[in-house]
Length: 122
Image 1 (cartoon, rainbow, N blue to C red):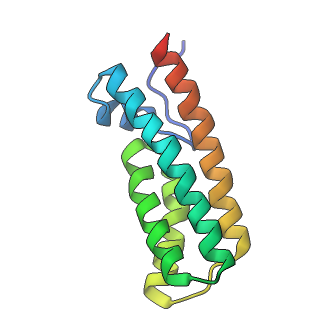
Image 2: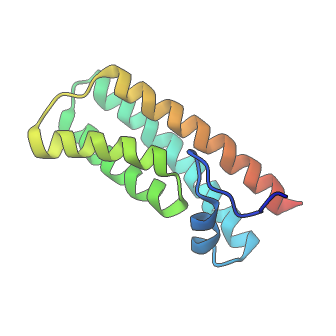
């Protein structure tokens, strides 16, 4: 038996349903915002990393962490928290592999959110 409310490494469906207030149209709007805004923030993180703008990288990671937590993208939020905390607390430089992990986590969350959006649109 399959439960409509699922939890995965990419998106906690219960959290998404909670923040969407049980309204499919509102949930779709939230998904669209995350897909667009999240993609831009991931791009900004990569650019800040490439330019060695550590403070900017931390700021963007912090913002993406909040968005990811709100929508239930826990793995993505965790990676962003690692970057944010590392920079904010120790000033440590972030590895390129960590940025790649964020990109992969966002891709996974995006795929799942897109799938949920299709389900809600049906």
